[in-house]
Length: 122
Image (cartoon, rainbow, N blue to C red; front, side, top):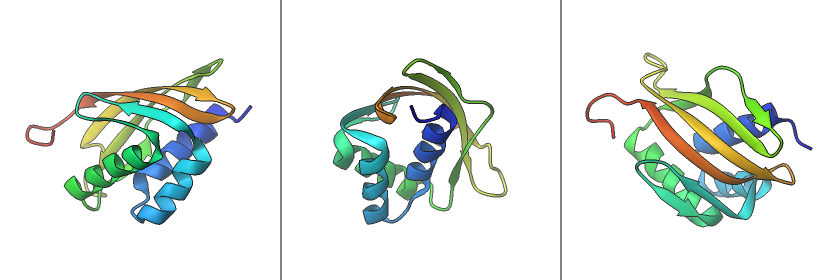
């Protein structure tokens, strides 16, 4: 089984990848073909839709980077991890916690929660 921290690192890498072709390759490697993603603002199914969602977030917040925030927890095929998003000058502008299910070391589903969002950012 793939280490939970490694899965979370790959997840963050996908969200930070600005090149659509490289992002698609990362999605294919780390997410199941029928993976789902949902948070309070958006949802998608499959690599193509999830890739477009990530691209939309990058367009809305150019120059922002995701980072893991704290420890990655896991239990069986379930993961929980928190993240921060922001520019270098304010790296924790937006914060969230994601819960994920894995299958064969790849993400199967991700449900995200927004813990800190400044007014006007959502």
